[in-house]
Image (cartoon, rainbow, N blue to C red; front, side):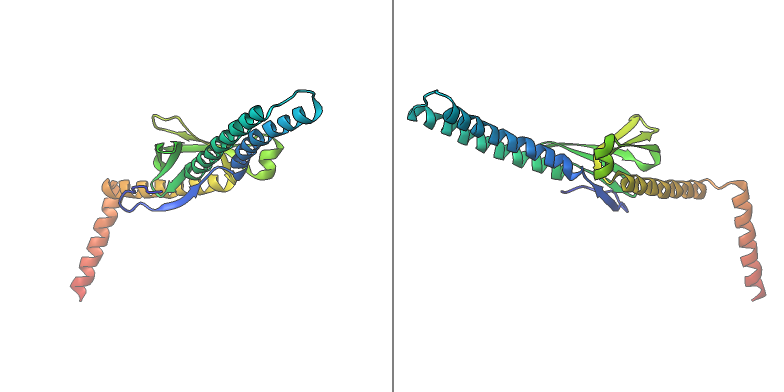
Length: 202
């Protein structure tokens, strides 16, 4: 996955949906493949319906096309699962949503806009498998930045908050350096005077 980064921007972590989300989709596709075959077997074995060879060949042809379509569906599902991601850098949090094979949307949230993060888990399954939804409260136009079905949400939350703290500290330091207070100006002048005094003694 190619992603353009800003100057001095580094990727801290990449988050993806829990594997159980993909497993559920695969089970649904597998069920769609198996159920028609089971129904056909039950009709032939336990009913008095006569199926001619031509009709049987037609059913087999339709079934083969169905399997082909489901394989394509599996490929698209897996591709979307792998390409759907949340990328955390030292400057921002990006949500990459793979809408289709060749279409994706990217939403960006600057870390200095993050106010709070809420973690939600629904039921015992989420608790047991380590699945959760993170809701990032922001101070920008986008009030909420939602990360659903994420794996290991507690760790993800901690990493995001740590990156936010580091970014806020950096922004605060830069603002102080650009706009010094009278106290910092006096301290700088005193340091300059001390340096001048020492050089004079030498």
